[in-house]
Length: 270
Image (cartoon, rainbow, N blue to C red; front, side):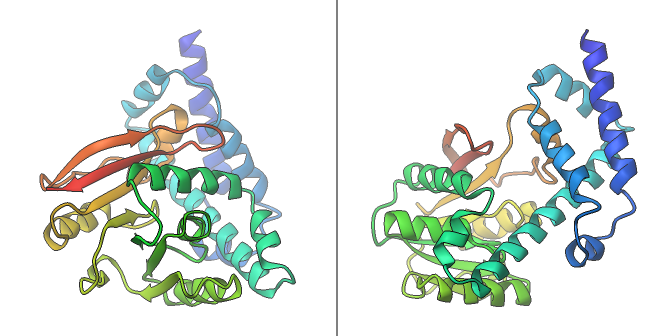
């Protein structure tokens, strides 16, 4: 039975890869997704399967499938980016910005993630947080500010995404609470008191980012990042494994409750 499930999962990965492997990042971002969206929806359903950890471990030990899964994970990330870009544009151009934002498929997920971040970092109203890799749709910052009165700075290194998110913040009337900075992890506003730094899932490379944070952040600064700990989602995280510098100590993890699948990991700069 175990071998049957393992073989079925592997075959599914190979089949999905065969269908989408010819796609480029540019094609995913620029073209209509009518053709390739069903394959990513199929991947999403597959990732949600209730699979024992031993199946994941055996797949991790199979080096032949590693490049296949790595490529799928990358294309999945680009497709997620496309969804964020399209959502941001529709909100900016639409008649009722908050109603449109709440229609975003993963809005309930981000509501729960914001609660997890607020709780894990022990934030309070008026605290300032930094989000590295905030992207075109910085929902984590938006909901922390909207729901909990936190102030935020989003750092995004792609100019068009930074510009898009800045327009979004303006249309949502959150300019007094959120500022977008064009840059990367080397662009931390060190002239301001940094209480909490969030490292986005799509902020890369993780090793370099955390190495810099270990040197740059003052003692007692809190940092968070998100991982997948369970099921096939573990395989679809491009940088789920990286070396954490000794300057950081993990002080808590908040594991997900539906609809969230990410575990939020919280660190303290020693």
